[in-house]
Length: 193
Ligand code: AMP
Image (cartoon, rainbow, N blue to C red; front, side):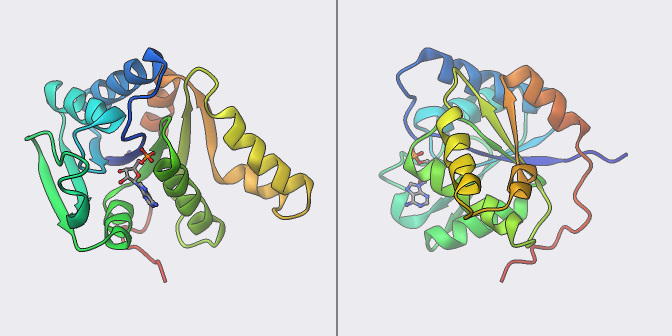
């Protein structure tokens, strides 16, 4: 089996209030490097995003950041290592990250991370892709996210099969073990829109 070669990590541009979040981000960056999985990330050097990227780079991993031009200053672009792709806007950024990634990992984050998770999830619901979406639960942060989806199912706004569109995995070691089992997606071409 040919395994995945890259994974996009969606996570906070802040570090969050619990030190467990940064510890998880660091372990994820190191683990991706150890597994030879290229990190696709938002390109910023701040928050959990910066922690994952620096850890992956320090451990000898490959990484590519994708940053829209207007956020270059605000998000303290780039950690000075790996490739940086600058896009004209947010939508192009998301599309590039989607195209470059064989799978998606969600670490704790804020509104941007929620948006990225739900967008990639809805693209999968629409069968625009079949790439794995793995939420890494750290200190129970994923629970309310899952609760929103359960509420949508319970109230008849989503089908029960929506539960099969993503996986919630407790902690980074289990997440890395799951990533290592994933086959490379069949189509490398984005089929969006
Ligand atoms: P946050 O989780 O809010 O810290 O944001 C994490 C990432 O999502 C950052 O790279 C942001 O650039 C990105 N982001 C922030 N706001 C949005 C938004 N409205 N739509 C999509 N992505 C966003």
